[in-house]
Length: 550
Image 1 (spheres, rainbow, N blue to C red):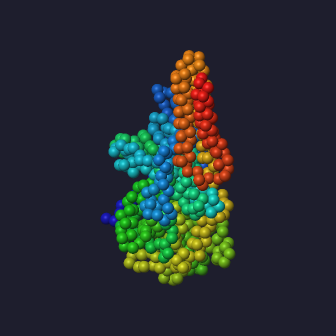
Image 2 (spheres, rainbow, N blue to C red):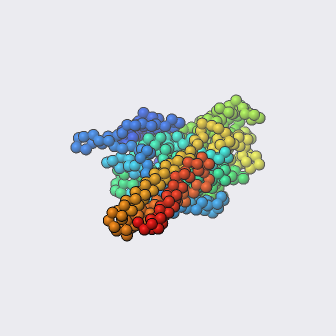
Image 3 (cartoon, rainbow, N blue to C red):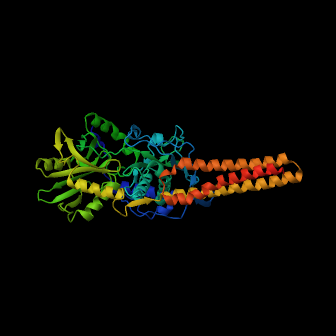
């Protein structure tokens, strides 16, 4: 029997009420500050929740706080083994395996809630073989990018939407909730820490892929709500994926394939949406196609192209020009950040026409492969493209459907006019050629100022301790007559100064500050000089003391 025939029946109201009730119950315990937000719906919000209330747990009948995720508690441990940055276009970047020096981690338990998050050296995770995520697909993730702009600045693109969408995903698969604003703060901290080294200003137009992830780490078998979870964020080197000269080649899914269904979880960014699709994707690539164009139902309604949203520009039989994409109403496709941005830009800039481009009507509705086939045959199909974080805006040049090869119009391998102008608008915002509220600028000097503060404290403390010990050592040596003991304490103080100076140097080596701004150097250089100057002064004092034979 075809898997489509096995699709769960559409009982949206009853199923939705049950799911939303479970989500609300979970948020009451794990992240009550977000209960009044829109984050538990399928519609994303640009506004982040930033509540201050805590959940509660009960011990012996007494309510005690259940900690929410709190970025202000972040513990920072810098790596002592900095990783080399691969060259642009290298095999290392193409492998999608190379990550930056650091990562974010935060643990959650049903007993305590969220622990203090940490920024720590990148490295492997420790999981028991019985961990829930390894057996029951209790994991979700986000996909974002950190851009080095042509204006020299580091940017995120609408990161509030990603953080809100991750809460939607965690809610759907029984993982703990969190205030999205706190997740964003952690992501920004990681980007500020590693961005300058891994996206130097000498590489404008480059980017890093950001992967926030949450997994159920509960080491217990059994189909049940996880009692432990791990949140982590990594930055990965990633190659551009939007530059196919002939456009994407898509293979329409067969009747025995289905990616998502109403009442399921196609709207959530969970691993279970992707793993089952890899067999079909692998077969498609073996046949020379780039991705599967996922269809749904007997009418072959178009949903997504691989893991990206799909758009067509066509002319209706009545002569109207339309930009069309599938709706979110059935909750079987992802509310993509790029998708949303395409629609919003198109509505504000294209509906009335743009320069030489004809005005276009923006439509979100169900449409089938039969409609695309008819548009091709009647020469009404203008262009098509896929939109997502990884593929960005990728023009489509070919679709294979039920034995037919449908050619999608292309212009000089760059896609159609609407594809190109939408892509140029988005690139302008992402890489700083256009000032826009969607561009979230990372304060690179933030990390520099924090390190300067730490170095000032470390240097001052080290020098103070060393000088005090030296003075008391000399006095003790004079009073007791034991010059050897006094000199020994003095030498111990000098050793402390050397240690603190070495620590300061290691911080600089790890952070690789060669690309930071002049304002950063002005703020950090004085505290760096301090321990070394004190070393010189104390070495001179030590030599003088020996000279006068105290």
